[in-house]
Length: 222
Image (cartoon, rainbow, N blue to C red; front, side, top):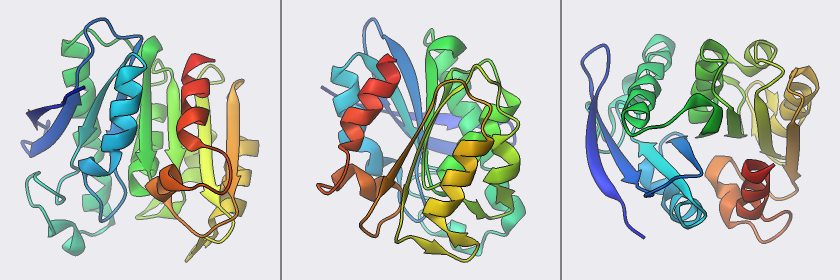
């Protein structure tokens, strides 16, 4: 399996680096947004595994991170408004996937931490998109997932993952995600809670608890 480096231009004229994991005749499409201070490479193993499963993926470096404009460390000086502006990076990724034939009913957004919050925000504004896989969403950088999750469409699928030992400024992340699960109107939703301490893409390497990669495959297939 392979990936191709691509460059995107956002609606506010930012250059965004991305890795495309192409599939000739995709079962569906995935748009990956990393946590902070990670990069698009944090999704590589999962993206390759899901590529072999028939899903074309696009993993972006959010602005101020990695190879994107302002990176690799520009995000350290971002205020809440600048973090929230990164939704335009996701929008650019979605436009790129659509140019390759992606359709909303077969597309899922995959995000970790701030990337999960931004993906959730994007889903509320684009309710035709099939759903989201959100690892450690929370209440930070001015994005309150409890408010956002209520705005999802009942038809949008939702997979949430969190750790019981992930204490955030806004509270315990597992408790937060139980709340999000209960608030979500989604008719097809799942919550995975891990015992060990961890956050976001850390869960992909956990041996204690559900195999998240397998859980994601089952979620995509369901």
